[in-house]
Image 1 (cartoon, rainbow, N blue to C red):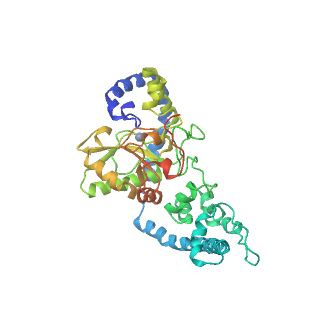
Image 2: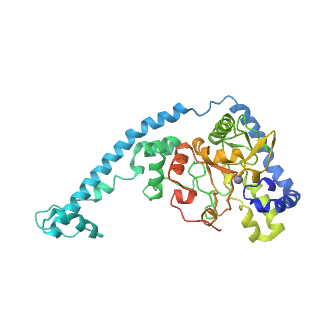
Length: 372
Ligand SMILES: [Zn+2]
């Protein structure tokens, strides 16, 4: 199990194998007891899900058709704010410059904090009423979708992935929790454990038509997306993509981490493995892929494989991001893992890609999480 762990860095692969044996010896009874019902449940879910429809392009297009309507509605509010603010700036600028239009823009640049007191006869704009309309948390379409647990509809109501991200990152959407483990926008890192710490998703299924090297499931939307991704990669001619670890329970992670501590101590374990309650795999929205050409290779082979190159360019189209990117350890807390894909949904993944983001922390304006 340790050999397949996502938080194992490439250069530690050899030692990880030795630790795997230690971990198995230490924790097998507990892990087996915990996993047996989950595995049975997974198999039942797989049978149920076998006929489930895949996400269709038409659904995605439908969402995009709605987005401009919502965007226009918001733009109208923004435009009103701009008009009022511009009016304020011009009025103050005119007052400061004795009425010269050419000097107005200079005066605007010098304004900091509340506007200067206007001359008699110049109306003072009321900005407070305009600012109060800016949060999506006041939009019934947004809050209704949020209460219904419909992540795609929430993002649609916000005006798309980019608008949703901007609202959350700027702090104007306090009704959105990045700690809610049931949401596609969940952020888990070394500073953000699960709440509850032993959270377990309720809709785990095995992805259809994907080679699973472990009996490890994903939440239903992520499973459907992985099926689509794997098919697209094969259609593109880059070869088969299989996977190792997807969902891992709190108890399984507890066993894995304890095994690492027993071998190398806490400091070393923390560099290589997530503590229980802090692993993205517990969300059911993370998966460790491997390239398969007949037989499947290892996690360390992903980065240099055709499948790995394709995933870097196309995973976002299916709602996945490479969660732990090259050179971002100081923010994400983990060394690069080309194999570890995290599902955040197609709209957020598009915004992530188009915005050039390389960590989920920066995407949502969260502090860096290099350590616990
Ligand atoms: Zn992983």
